Length: 220
Image 1 (cartoon, rainbow, N blue to C red):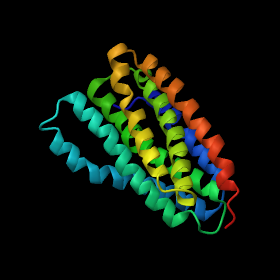
Image 2 (image 1 turned 180 degrees about the vertical axis):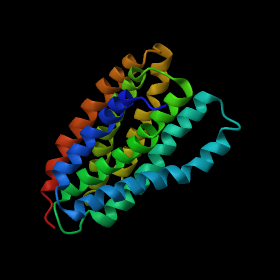
Image 3 (image 1 turned 135 degrees about the vertical axis):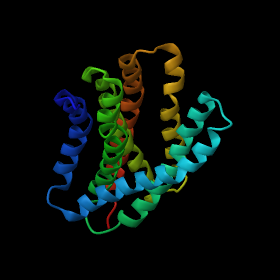
Image 4 (image 1 turned 45 degrees about the vertical axis):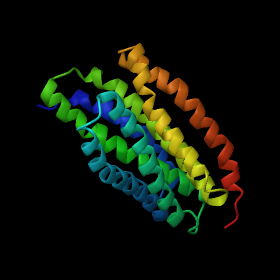
């Protein structure tokens, strides 16, 4: 049976990013399309790497499999992010708003499919209290911020140097793999998410602050 209180962590995971996308896109179909394409890019990157991870699960131990999954996410997602932005970035409109819309759509789709849809299922199976899911909601917002920052890096690679794609892949994989050493230190989900936030959010914020003016200055 679904508990109405489960809507609290679900909304906390989805609502901030959705509000940000609504404020950016407003009534502009192009920007909503950018958000949808970002979500589609995330989904394709997930589907195409799953067979590799399923095959690797037969031979790798959990730690090595987690590391592989972390960097496979970086390789596949940043490749598809590059392809989406290459198709959309120089279409008519604000470059920064396109980047923001793609990044937010990317992160929101991930949050919806791997968190919002899974919380009710997990509750049905385990019966955990709704508060157990709050750290995951917090983590989803960290991930959305990171996706926006990575989208700025990929966008900058299109107007500057394709080698920045490698930076995005490495950063994505490195952040994903942070959970492994942190889990060795603590099992407390709130401490885990706090450490991730303290590392990830300042880096992502700096990336956005540095690259946003550079991308804004590009004349179409």
